[in-house]
Every structure is written in structure tokens, then in C-alpha cells.
Amino acid sequence: MASYSRSLPGVSRSPEPANSPRRKPRQARSQASAEAVVQAAAQVLAREGYPRATTNRIAEAAGVSIGTLYQYFDSKEAVFDALTDTLLREAVRAVVEHLDDHGATLDARLERMAVAVIAVFARYPGVLRQLDAALGSSFRARLHAAKEQSRARLADTLRRAGVRRAPDLAARVLADTAEGVLFNLTADDDRDALARELVALATRYLADDGRSPAP
Image 1 (spheres, rainbow, N blue to C red):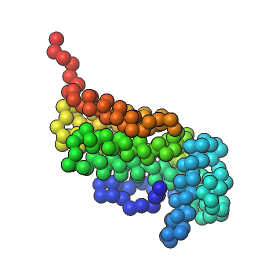
Image 2 (cartoon, one colour):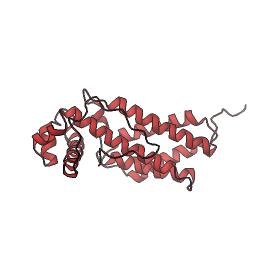
Image 3 (cartoon, one colour):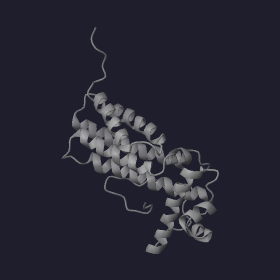
Image 4 (cartoon, rainbow, N blue to C red):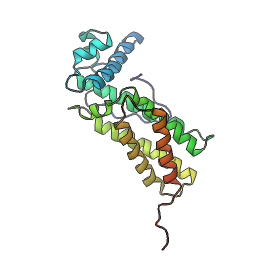
């Protein structure tokens, strides 16, 4: 889970979180420690919930001292903002990579994208709800930015594919539907089955132009 990775072409960087890391790690060992903290934060948040996800618990789960954690993050909110940044970057990367596979059919691209995006969040079921409840975090603003970027990319793909529905509105409907599924993931979910159902819903929806049948 790399929180300090480069952007892919076509993947814009999100604005800096309100609770920025205290300092950005430069050396490989320091970066590994910071990334371990972010990954541990996801595990603790999913397991314990926001109120109990203290910096002490996060540091313990990461296998670092509390002092090491505070070298990079000045509060647990800063850790959660870094976690948000990491998860959303991975999700947007999956959207871009799979929608840009122009050698595949639209259905195949949608299914691969759905599988990849679900896999990002299924590692930590419930973490999106916990991040949304985190006081003082920039989660909502950053989620909106990532969702808008993904929606725009999907709309462009639908436009190029010549779907019968209005591409921008269709992309919004599909993005909102996917968000609901991602927020409600559980540890018992069959991720591939969920992706197939999402794609089945999307393909049937896109096959119709949305107009009422003539009387």
C-alpha cells in the first residue's frame, strides 16, 4: 500500500489533505515505516472503529514506536487522511488502467475495473464508513474529487463506445451505485460475484436509451 507513489498519466493528484504528514519520508526505510503506519491504520480502523483507533494502537499494529509515528503524522486524523489518499489513489488508478484498455470490449473493461476497485476496499471491510465518520478528516472532499475524476473518465469511455444513454448522466448513476456497494462491503462478500452483478446491472442499463416506450 504505497501512499507516496507517483501519479499515473491521466491520474491527477488530489489536493494536499488538511492534516498533512508532519514530514515526508525520503529514505526507503523511512518510507516503509510511514507506509506501515498507514496500512496498520486501515486494519485498526476496520477492526476497532474510529473512536478506538488511537495512535498508540496504530503504532503497535504497525510495529513501530509512537515516536516514529509522530515523526510523520501529528495526529490520528493526519494518518487517516494519508490512508484516504492511498485508497482513493489505488481506486482511481484501477479505473484509469482498465477503462483505457481499448483492446477490450466495454463489458470486459467494466468488469475488470469493478473487480479491481472492489479489491482495493475489500481488504478492509467497513473502512470507508469509518473514514466518513472520522472527525476533522478531509475524507468527504477527497472522495468527491476522486469520484469526479473517475466519473469523468467513465463518461468519456461511454461516449467513445457510443452508448445509447447520455454518457455524463449514465456515468453519474453508475458511480453512485458503485459507491453504495463499496461503502457496504463486508468480510463475507464474494467480491467477484459482486463485480459481475454490478456489470450485469450496468450493461442492461446502458443497453437502453432510457426513453419511455411509445404508447
